[in-house]
Amino acid sequence: MKNRLKILRAERDWTQADLAMYLDVSRQTINAIEKNKYDPSLPLAFKAARLFALNIEDIFQDDETINKN
Amino acid sequence: MDTIKIENYTQRNTSNSKSVLIWSFLWGLSLIIAGLAVALWWPNNTTVLVISIILHLSFAVGALKAHLLWLKGLDELQQKIQFQSMAFTLGLTWIALLLMLLLNMANVIEVSMFHISLLTVGMAVSSAVGNFIGMRKAS
Image (cartoon, rainbow over all chains, first blue to last red):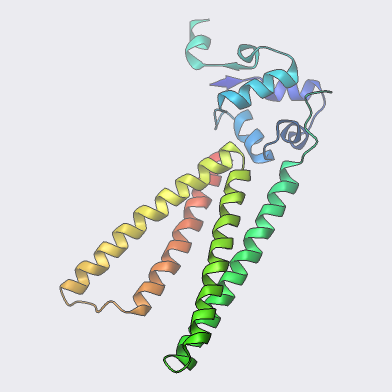
């Protein structure tokens, strides 16, 4: 699964630690998600979507959808 | 921003980790006290032994609860790493334990307190290795 978390974070001038604090997770978790080494759970994905005021699919995209496009 | 949570994950995790450290230290200390009670007063003074064992069990429950609270307070990735590390430790412990019993049956070794304590050291090491592998994979 790919995501736009790093871009969205950079647009707001937030550090990984800032985003981690907003989502109530560790900085390592944000780093792992941004590097596509960990796929977040649905509740965490919803939390991120709420934080950025976007739909989940605007932040997270599965590889199959990306390949089709 | 309404969605921002004021509660800090790092602060909460540090507090839970400190609690684990304190309870584990007390549990270890009570184990030494109980061991001394067995060595020095058993079987002459059963009261001291009973008190020391009750104290040890109380601290053990405290340490267990502190560990559970710490685990519950971790985020989902950290929990996943811990669970994988625990599975790794459990698997290795079963293998080592059964191998030890097999060698004991074959009279190659004689299982003693030393072997049991070696097993706990092995568990601690495998848990640390499991954690390290999990952290490396995620970083």
